[in-house]
Image (cartoon, rainbow, N blue to C red):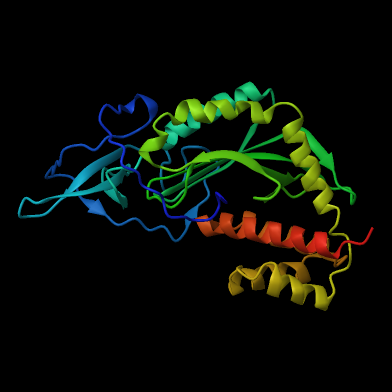
Length: 321
């Protein structure tokens, strides 16, 4: 399943008895209504991209409560209310989830992924963090492993921690790619790799599961992924004709919203660095538009993954050696 697309979580019948906070899992708490605490709605359309782990509009590692829902007549719902705490002391509603939903702290994911990166033997540098009160993505990059493309650009690896508090995405991590000269992140379900799991009680032992994936970042496997991506990028050197652009839009990036499509075409036509007018220039214009927006949403990541694999699919189909 593509971890960049939203999906419906599958709930099972496991019980949550005995689950503690030691592994980052938050059990439901009794209903508490302090008089001095007020709630406010989460605005998730866009959020500033912070340049450090704790920056931005939302603290990605803020305090979280999981409370049963109750009515004024005393009736208690089986559903749970997930709340994140702002620095102001106000709570934001991140989502309503099933009692069987396995909610894991962003910080717990980050702690385990720090170990994975440390044990990989690669040098990682923080790139950006995204948390809109519901969805979390924390991106690191490394140039310890890199490949030169046939046009002289250099591709290397990025590592993204993923999580959500509202059932909209799995938890875990991803390996994707970045282009050195412009630092455009390129997300690819086809060429990337990762370890993710659904937020269900069947994954209570997620810590052991995620740590077994450390070996993925060692040996030839990750090198083959980067080689595969670099080879696919090498097939985007042909001129971008109007016929090719029409095919790309209609058959390969047809899920990209019209506004985003217009933005990337505007950049392609008006930036001197794309004057050669190749397929690769369109790829760079698109990923630059999606990766370096002043405001970013989860859709920015989803659109990036759709656009990159769509372009690479077209390159594979149109490539003539």
